[in-house]
Image (cartoon, rainbow, N blue to C red; front, side, top):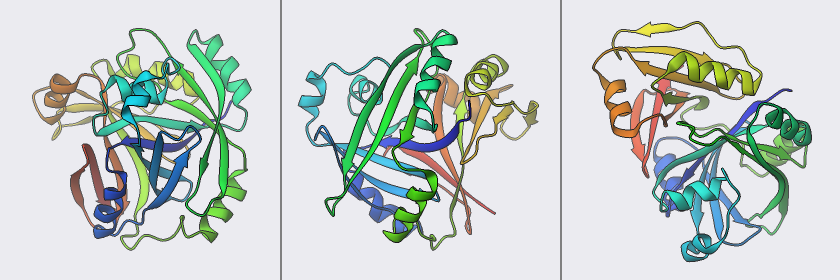
Length: 269
């Protein structure tokens, strides 16, 4: 079973504002369109096939009334009371049925596959399937799984022709997501097993007062940090618990900024 990083979902009640802010930083973003159930829409920033989705809601009252699947993206958005910030992220597969069986064998709660679609501003429709996975009382939400109707090559060609995938003025590329966790090796070992990847060795960052482990995924790595002393990482853990707290890019400038409740960092290549 092979998995790749697909996209980060950043929920916000103002997704179009992300376009303006990102373009000031030399990062291209576009309107994505509305989803099949009509209660959500998005704007998108692509880095080849890896992307950040700024997801918004057209009717929060309707979303509260819907019985969302367990461990689903919208269940979390509603549970968080539509708070701006990172919601979940998606891992891509080319065989979602096999992925469902894989996660069931690992003892996870599995819902789906669920067919979904989005209507673009030009009226064209794209389709995909989602799989929601999770476990009760987990300290850190697991990703959801996506399988696109089109192949990677077809999607890349189509998105490039539409100027959705294009070179960013800042030369930005997607690097990784950063998580803060209490139990580093236990968490990383579990995620490595679930995603069929090998974890890096543990390293120490004295400046952060943290130990670090990495899961290497095509399209974007997952970096886990755990405090070994007082510092920024220990403060984040005390404030937020185990969490996804930063999206990391590479570009021609070095900058850390907050955008619509999410933390971003650009490091120079």
